[in-house]
Length: 102
Image (tube, rainbow, N blue to C red; front, side):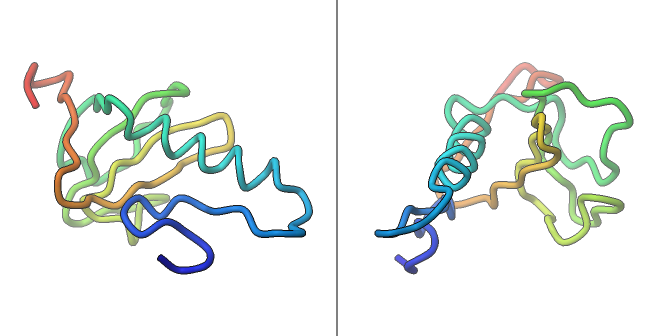
């Protein structure tokens, strides 16, 4: 594990003496909210949706554009603070709402 994030989901970690710990903690919670019992609107989408709602997620396609550039195959989740991305890791799965399956 690096000293700045967890190895699998790359969640930010707190450090002794760190100021503004609530920001790091809240960022970790936002990422956990995306992957815990993950459900995505669709899979393989390259363009971010125009009007996402907080809590909605998508699995990014192979050639992402716009605000998703650099996050191919990640889970993209819209939050009150904007887009958050969680990279795919072995064992991570999500329910596809569009397909009605995992």
